[in-house]
Amino acid sequence: MRLDNPLLVRWEYASEERLAKRNAVLRSLSQGASPEDAAFDAVAAAKPKRVADIGCGLGELGERFERELGARVSAVDLSPRMVELAKGRGLDAQPGDAESLPFEDDHFDCVFAGWVLYHVPNITRAIGECARILSPDGTLVATSVCNDNIAEVWQLIGITEPREPLSFTRENGEALLAPHFGHVERRDVDVEMVFPDTESLRTFVASTIDRAHLAPQVPEIDEPFHATARHVVFVATGPH
Image (cartoon, rainbow, N blue to C red; front, side):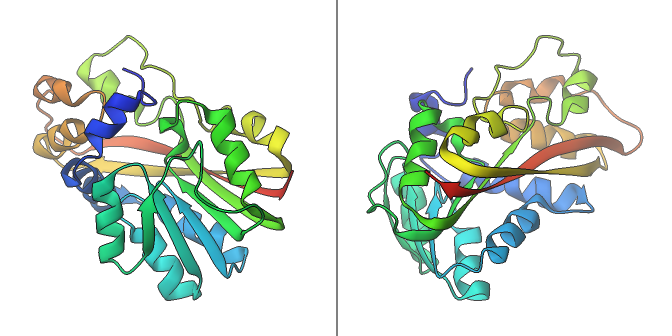
């Protein structure tokens, strides 16, 4: 099941319940560095006045950009429900497709694409759109994960077949961004997750997009189970 399948994406984000559950589990069980904070810090370093939040989801980071950085945020999402939730946070949000962004050329100081580009069918076109709407000295901050993200959980369950590869990951992101930007920096963010009991493991698996059906296969555990969430933050400058 590919995560850039348009039908899957529309179904998954038609409501916020599963996304909110995933976020809550990841935040509550993660120790050490926060990938969300790493993404926020990368945007903050650009000192933007105008930010485009592509695939804004619940609008949580977009709200932080406005509140803590004083930036004006323009948010877009393919899901009408996510747009509604972002508006509820006070953001200027509208429906939008990453492959055809509803903005003028050279309009933003920063574009933020947080854990979204692997959902886009035509990743090259989406990255080109991000570059197009950036000012010549603007910054793209794009986040993702590894293909083997939280691999320990799937090994515990006994899943041996590989997952469908993501289209935009820690492994290939630099190569995909390089044709559109003069400089690309990769910042790896590995986070230890500690599942205290079987129920927390099952809750997490049930909240995943492509493997929720495997939750009943999670075995009983007698002690905390450790896994690694493998994220990445790309900072790209010099759009062309």
